[in-house]
Length: 124
Image 1 (tube, rainbow, N blue to C red):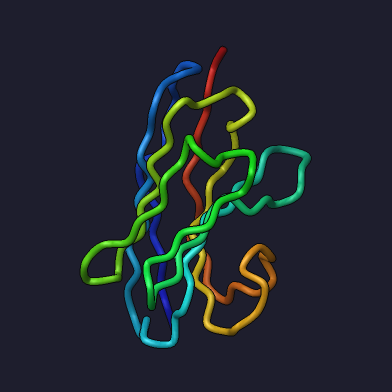
Image 2 (cartoon, one colour):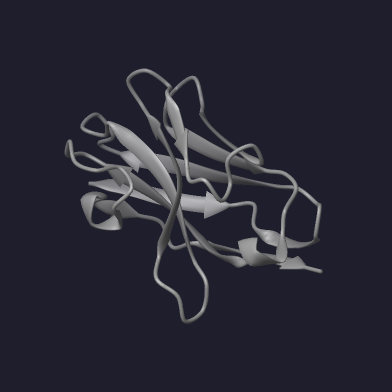
């Protein structure tokens, strides 16, 4: 089992920055990919970014590429999402997730473990 706890959400004005963090505990050894997803009210959960734990390779959704940066800590039990140039459309609940199977990293169903989420609100 893996436990994930997110932190760092908040409210900012458009153009501002926030950094989200996700702390993982438990048996993280089977984890091969960590991801961030977001869900706005009335919308489906959307993939934002992932990082592969074995080679630190990040991947991003087109909507955040160039603005968001995903990284993992040296101990590989923390994952961060630095968000710059925030837009009102980035407003959502952000979730950290851990994947243990070798399936499409953009699909939420392929992540076995999830945090409770942290709210990000961007005002115009």
